[in-house]
View: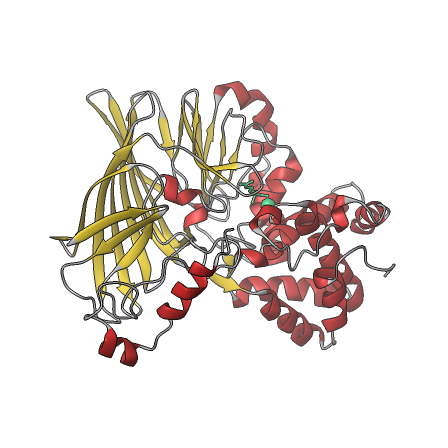
Length: 465
Ligand code: ARG
Ligand code: ZN
């Protein structure tokens, strides 16, 4: 039902050329070429993101009170990519108290499912910069994903575990929440004294007054909304700078501290090892957030991965590898998710291989031995089919198997050149599977279409390589 015809109709209207839109535009109240689309056009999450504008910067000011209530002010600095008489923001739940566009109250503000529909007082010209300010409050709740998992603002016994992949950003701030739209972020988060609020990037400062502490965080590198966090809890904090000058901030729930310490201590050496394989670390800050929550997954939140309990070393390696593959080079569509998960999983195989564990070939062989009916072969990683499948074994494990097949076909020197070239060519941007295939062919000088066709796009268990 999520791919209903309604979306198709809106998408078509949203692509009316600006010249035509100008003719029909302002006269019609809704559904014209000057109405920003309700989604970014993602086949699996059609309402994620919005059409008609790019958010350059988010300035989020949040106050969290014990008990879970949140008040927020989001100031978005955006640029219109088409003429806009109306545009949408993604926001689910919460109460909106006011919306201004360029400091003028919006003419109309409507809620429609996960869309916050804003009609500014004046039509915005294509190419124009504008600011949107949304004041809101409420008790945020996570969203349930098609696979049954929860994401977004997930309350814990001492705060919140905030993990937005793929669609949770809209549970705590209004925005253009599709990985296609990347932005810089400022966070000012006030929490009861004794709690810590951890977001992305560098800590600009913290101040306690009147029984509350305010944390100011800044991420200047482009970040997809699904990688933003504002995790709150009672944390032990450890800060240091690596010998490469990366500022590290670790926040650990005391209940996880003992188990987490030896693994978190390896972060600098893991980042150094990954930098040798993948190229320079893409960000200026790093760290870990180790919470004590029953969420069931970790997330590669930009610069500072988030764990629901003390991670094992391979999980740390996986989330760290995502900083290159997923965070710096983001998927253009959720369909391309193997570019995140296949790569991060293959990083685990490489880590084992180079640190006294199983060779990547051995890991591959173990997986290949699984019978044809196994879930691993349920769908191809390059075309998972729906949002329900984006975090399944075919994406992670068969995605890594595809990379291993590539490595065998081109040899180690070309393979590692490809990994680095991919991170360099799309640094702080996006990539698609088609672009990866082209880049692999260019770097190796080999035709690889049938290899990728077999491993990424063919249903069922591929024949023995
Ligand atoms: N990208 C995360 C990882 O490192 C998984 C996120 C899962 N999200 C979810 N809503 N189930 O593998
Ligand atoms: Zn992952």
